[in-house]
Length: 586
Image (tube, rainbow, N blue to C red; front, side, top):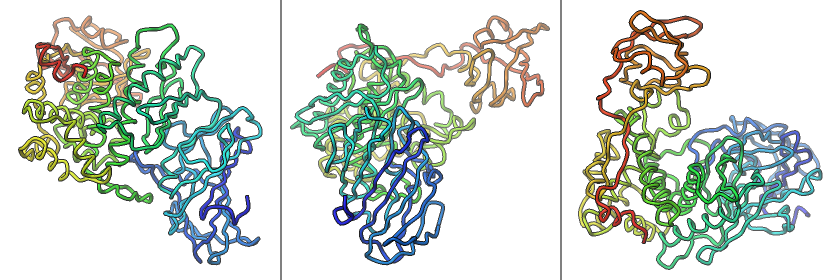
């Protein structure tokens, strides 16, 4: 393709040898500035952590008119080309691709995947110009296909070829999947969808996944728009099935997903496994984001700053409310029954109740601190922070049940009103408060102050009871009673110690190997925590034998009384008629 025919900013991606795990990039800037700056993003929208993608960029060089151009590095991720203005500037570089997640780039002899934020240098001053992307099919992989939500310009049937984005933001929002995969298509409410699945075994029931995902899509399109119109012309799911993995990253017209291969539906199995239900919840979650965070989004995300953290206190709304609706919409689509939904909801409640950090940090603060806390958990995390996903979901639950009890509206109505009034654009917490008032006829400042900006307990039991569901204390497991999170594989290894727990008072630390116990003068080897009751019997005190840094320690441990308040709950329907008004199918 001649340089004159290229878009103002054009990337060519070569894969000369996928076995080297390297993408070879050629960036052509048709009309550069006299001192043209380029940089690689430090993060990818939707995943709130500075990931330093530039650490994978190597061999950067530039030419203009046949001569080498001097490149000066200005920062960890930015360079300046000392070039002439207006004459095409060509940069060559390579990107190391060995991150199997949905957030970066991967390449080997079996599969390729990348987000533009990991491989495409951003041309300063020209971010709003049209961007072209050409991906060449590797000669050694003649059976590979390519899938992306980008608009094709000249792409072959297998998908390799040229694509175009309106600007850098759109380019960054369309991941690219390559390899040998299954490509399935369906139409939901008149909108074409594509489901791409990589890494599936022969037992994979593709027809079932296609049918179930279609029901999710139709349910959500109708949820957001009474005329069942999607805000996109087409949508693409990119699912990579691996031996161990789970997660997703949302985009405006697509999503990248990773799942455990064992969680895929299997031919001949009628009953959905727990893992498959979790996978459907992941599909539901990321698809809901096409409205809630990719279009309707925090005002701080009106334009992304790819050079640094982008702070907002609203992740409790955009991630937490999405987490409330992902499973609820599975129920409404008829993909899980009422008992199945309540089991999933109880799991979310238990995750929050077993996090002492909920009494230390508000969910608004957790949103703001996502950059340094959520994606960097350590042994102190449970005692100092709370998840804006799980507690945000419970805030949504409390608002929904409170609104329903008023009889004037539901949280569904509030979200749809926000969508209409924002025109699918940036919003603030003030806009959320305003729509709550408009829909319900009263102010919600006290509740939002307490539930979102405070650290007190949520009124879950009261609100659930008002809708026919009882929250009952469940039997704690030994690790929960002691305040531990452990790994049991050939012994007991301590992973986390919860603040204020019996284990903390005894002096346990993350990394300890719990070898055994001494009770009433007898010593016992401890292979799993369930054996603690066997050896302790009715004794309230014992000595824990622990190995730490190759030292043997004896820790005095007081066992909590069995009747101590449970940190686990289960949900049960007490009044079916009331529960059906909330959880019954439409």
